[in-house]
Image (cartoon, rainbow, N blue to C red; front, side, top):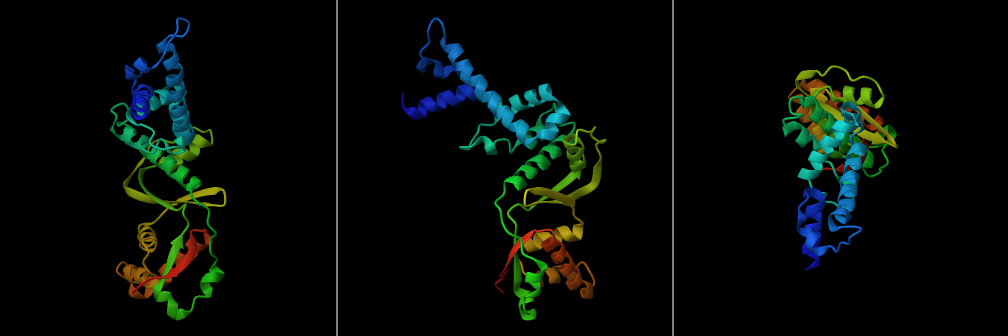
Length: 261
């Protein structure tokens, strides 16, 4: 048998219990084939579930070890590990929670999983050094219209309908979770890391729009033009400058660039 076929059979056994690999394994009276395979199969499944536990500590605290293990089993059966490192395993857990009838009746659980995975991505993002307000003050007035901004790799924006951040904070603090509550409309949340500390906060609709424009690589002048459509024209530049100062002081911006006209 070719190595690729052998690996495929072994993976099918580990993930879905398909027994084709048994014909390629030698057993003994003391340790039969099924026993040998079960040792590897159980260890692999448990390792993947442990990885999910490390990514979703609030969800683990909410469900408890037994129920989380059942959720983990369902996920392992449905999702192969497609990365060399299992560090990246578990990104689609929110989709399972949103579609599986056992969990779909509690839609805030899927959002909690989305929020926790975003926190994981924020923590693992590459390091970068933020710029200062003083650095921006050195920009020549004639250069501001075409000035673009480079954002920290950790920055994430997430739209949430339910109070998932409040759930996460309570559960990770060892407290009882709040009652689930949904907003009339999704709320944008900003997540980022500065040094080793993760921060998150909700955004107003206007700041969310402004941040999306800036992160898309558009210039400060274009940002002002877009805000002028929502505000009085005389308020657009001051509001854009206020947003920019907040982003810089929070450590979100790591560089500037000259946008093409």
